Amino acid sequence: MKILGIDPGTATMGWGIIQVKSQKSKVKSYGVIRTLAKFSDSQRLATIAQELIKIIKKYQPDVAAVEKIFYFKNQKTIITVAQARGVILQVCAQAGLKIFEYTPLQVKQAIACYGRADKEQMQKMVKIHLGLNEIPQPNDAADALAVAICCANSQVRG
Image (cartoon, rainbow, N blue to C red):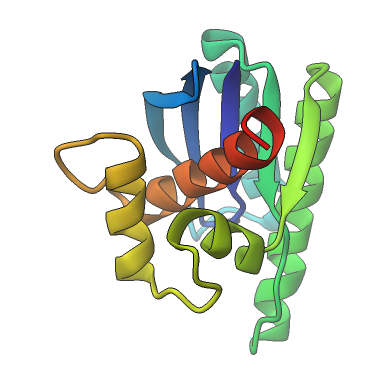
């Protein structure tokens, strides 16, 4: 099974594709979709949609795993991330992907077995889970891979 993991964002959206076979996960690819600060919100959302469609067509994932929004201190940020999530969910649904959603707490528990794991702990565990030589960069891509691993643990291995 190929899983597309997504860490939603408007300026930077992380994505990662893992292949799960025989209880083992292997990275197929990962990266980020970046949008320019000078773009309007609608241009940013259109860019996210266009680039995500390309990723889905190229890698043909079976399912998508998307991180849910958690509490933000900045109200403006939560609104734009919610808009990006809406576009992400719509693109994945139109592509016919089954969509799984996970809270940051669920992802942390699945990866580090600790709901309060910090970013550094999470990145090290992603590296270990996927048998990588280095921590995936940028951070948003590592976060997306963590979401994909969480999905693998709960849907494939669970």
